[in-house]
Every structure is written in structure tokens, then in C-alpha cells.
Image (cartoon, rainbow, N blue to C red; front, side):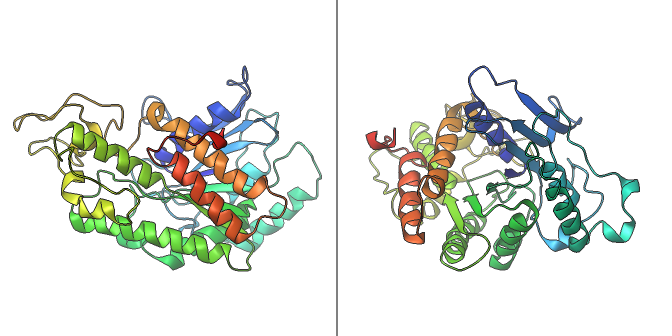
Length: 362
């Protein structure tokens, strides 16, 4: 299950394209969309069967899965942060593999007081499990939980209590005992060096929370970190060299923690004249450096807008990284926290960096 905003949707679709068998790319795909753009925005989707059985799903949530954000109705939103509701999770859990429809709970079925009560939805979930239908999803093994950074204030995300609650809620409503959290990349909401430092702080917090949960006795067995921010930062820095924003002779140690903060001035160079409210940086969208009078520049296959990423460029490494991280947990009979940690590091070193993938990963 991929949970997050439109960036999560991008990479969920990339994962689907790899997880569905050859010739099954147009397999059963139930989805709920919102018609505000072309193409439509996907709110919820589920693909089945994927290789090895099971399903792959996407749940658009532009907020954290916190109790304070649990509201009914939880309509897919485009212009404001989206609330969520446990009825949406139950829609996924009750989904039948051979169905092309996602059946949402109706307003008429539940009274107002019950729609945000955890106990109510827990009873509904248990009732659905008792049916014993082997063709119903019932539970998810893994959730890829992306912090929807484009919708939330940095200070709001920089909070271990909120991140832990989102992890615990993901387990409670979906059953996922393994959670993968990608680190945050540069995006066009990052306006200043102070903002960029906060992004680095949040990424450190993600690593800390992941380690603490994995080493503790809890319902969630493993929280793994996908170093997506590290991969994109390295790509942006190499493009910055191409744009002569930084000299090629300057050695950058990508293994040094915090290297990206020290080069904030390079990451944050943007057009001096622009009509965009949230202008991207040159390194994100330019293949050649624009003149001082230019409002646009020739594009590059990194990002179209400073927020989303070109899946044709990053999708393969992203998907391989997720597969590798899943293997750290599910390809071993009795994984230990230390063994999972070492495996996670190997996955990130190979797929979430510009290093050549080692032969033993194939």
C-alpha cells in the first residue's frame, strides 16, 4: 500500500508496472478518481493480482494519518489538505480481487457519531474478516508511508510523536507490520536555507524513529528508510555541475551526513524573474542555464515543476529499492533488527545513490 500525495501516486504506478505480470499491465485495476485536471487525479486504486499473488494499492492522503485528521466524509481533495477516515481503509480491506470497483461506505449506512470512532470501524473490520473469503484483501503486509511535504508545514512534520502516531495508525487500520518511509527530497516549497535545514532535520528524525520502532517490541515489527532524498539530491548536484552552478573540480563526499545542507546555495538557485508562485530551482528543471531575463529554461528529465519527479528517470531505481527493502524482511526466515538494518543500508547504497549497482544485487 502506497500512502501519500500525487508523488506517491506517481511511484505507485511505477511499482504497478513492474509488479504486474507481462501482458497483465491492464489487469484488474479498481480506482476512484477526481476530475479536476487532465488526466484525472487518482484518489484510491488497487491492482491485482501482482506477481506472487496479492495486491498493490494507492491511497491519496495529503495529511498525516492522525486521530485529529480522522473525519467523515473524507473526500479526495485537490485544493486543501485532505482528511482521512477509517472507512476508506476498510474499503481497501474489503476489496475483492476480481472486482473492478472500490465500494465506499455510504453516508446513510452509519450515523454521524460512529463515523470517526475507532471502535466502530474495528468492529466492522473484524466482521469482514469473519467472512473467510479468500478473495478479499483483508490486510496489507507493507505500507510505503510518504510524508506529504507539499501540503504540510515543515515544523508540523518535524515531530516524532506525529510520525509515530502515523505509523501506529497505519498498522491499526491496514494491518501492515512493515512500514517504509522515504526521506524528503528538495521541492519548490523549500524557500530558504533555513527551510532546507529543516528538511534535513526531518530526514534525520525519520531515521531515528525507524530505528527506535524496529528495535522495540511493538505491533509494527520493522520501519525501514528509503533514502529517496539522497538519490535526488545527488542527481540535482550533478546537474548543478552541468549548469556550472558549482565547479566540477569541487569534490563532494556524498557519504558525509549533511553534505546537502552545506551546499544549500546551489540547491536553491532559482530564476530571478518568474510568474510561478512556487518556482523550481535551476538544478531541478533546467538542462542549460537560463539568462537573467528568462522566465523559463530548456527542460531536463529530472522534474517538470520542482515538486514531482520524472518517473522515467527515477522509477526503476525507486521500484528496485522497494523490492530490495521488502527482501530484507520477507526473504529471510527470522530477520533480526541488526540484520534488517545492514540489509537496508545495502539497498540504499545500491539503489538510492548514483553508485553502480553491485553484481550481487541482480
